[in-house]
Image 1 (spheres, chains in turn blue, brown, purple, orange):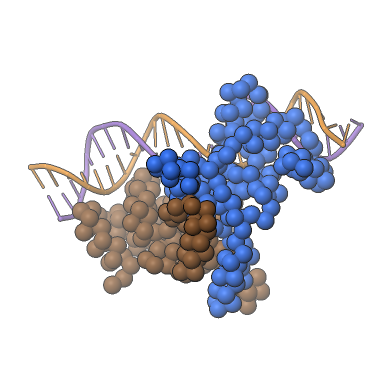
Image 2 (cartoon, rainbow over the protein chains, first blue to last red; image 1 turned 90 degrees about the vertical axis):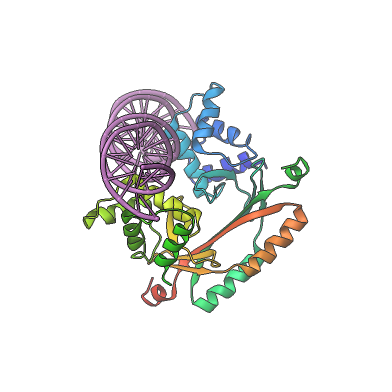
Length: 143
Length: 143
DNA sequence: CTATATGCAAATTCTTTGCAAATCG
DNA sequence: CGATTTGCAAAGAATTTGCATATAG
């Protein structure tokens, strides 16, 4: 089952409707390999003649993020973009040259945080790890 | 040497000027135990009668962040705030109840990322780790 | 049919910028 | 004095909201 199908199934199961605009947005999301912003996605839709309202884009992205079908990627500089989420792969390596995102699990990280939490008596409920650098392809290409 | 003194020394060493507004801003920054935003800081200054321009606040915070005297904390929801940085302590545990930030080093994390980078031939240039949860004090208080 | 979702335009919020006046060193 | 910094107000982004209309189920 493709990502779109899974999302649609999931949303339907929760009583959300599978509307035209939502299908279009899902379709366009899949064209990105790098993190994108709501405005970028909106512009892409409009450029190719798809008339979807700005609010709908914002609302749909938020909905998808809440269901973890999209994840938010932050950069130290403060920009944030969305990337398609794969359940279980929670962390990201973002290539600063081509923008590609590689996801990985943080099993060892959990151990590290677990130890820390115990030492500090801090109850950790969630965490966030992101690294940026240059991917193999871009290194070869001379970045 | 206090944080303010260190910052002032560091800035002076780089040819920046130790102006009144900058001193005021440093003073107010230290009143926060939780992450704060530029607007919050500006409001705090104004509420207590300190007349500093909005642009000055934004520019000073950015300057401090560039020198790593302040660090940016991101929340999954997308808000970001500044916290006083202690060199060498790069990661944060943020308490969602009281907002307090505990900093820690990520030595083990570096190992994890190093292995990952090697496996993927990815050159990691920076990373970002943040966890949120409830601190000991707030757990005791019943959060 | 009816609850949900959409689209629009206006309202907010956050941040940046240009430039003359002020000020630190 | 001269370069840096400030403050202002305006410009520019990014995001949210209210509400009438459209539409999926």
